[in-house]
Image (tube, rainbow, N blue to C red; front, side, top):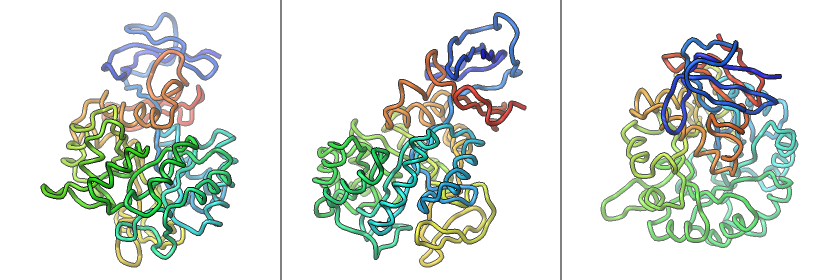
Length: 378
């Protein structure tokens, strides 16, 4: 079946142009400028951007990926899809090795079914001093052998692991990850600048939610932030919700790392799309008040209630990025991290028809995944 979307403003890495596109068998077959050659669904000048790609997400709609429960995972994926996220990686939090292996095995089924793009282990190989909303009693020193076991449990669907570069065994574990085709992310770390550089040299290529859960920048002790921002090999994650980061810091990271190395993420947890209340994040209890998630004990920020459409909108309205820049860091750059940029992440001929239709105010008006509407344009 062929679908033509006409009278659209198509957002590409090169800019925004009025035009049309045709979709067949779940893929984009034509992208044109001006009037469409024939009839189609007229979008009335609304924007069309590529589906958002979220590489760090713990859940939503009351469902939590760390439980490993397929029904909860499906509910979370559906919630984020309605907000424009057409590709999503499920993030786990620190737990016992047995619980992590069990959750990874359960979520691997959903990866194989195409519902999830992979599994991210955010812990247990992180710093006690910077553990945030992770249970410090369950943290472990990085171990290549243990990680190999978790990768095996995930049946090839573990795509990323967060490691604190300063811990004993960290560099060997980073090397094990990269040798196994798993992205080594550096974060939840108390590392020095030099230790972080060593982690990058070992293969670390992503900064887990830059700025958060790491020492702040200091002019005599630059720490991990400077190392991760400046190194061309590293993509930096940013939680652009106005709680984790001031817009000026998001802008600073973007100006240093550029659109090719900056990835918006949500770090969402079960409360995304829900109201205030008490929720779980792995073994930790979280209070959500006025949409902000914090640990019930200690008050550390515990993920977010963010969705990618809000992160995108804030990037334009609060951070001051262009539509093309915001689209790239919400879609194409994270797709590159996952090695999927040849298939998705931009409105381009031959790519998967994952699309988000946005109003003038950048509110979601329609969502298409693989050529089928999740949210019919309105």
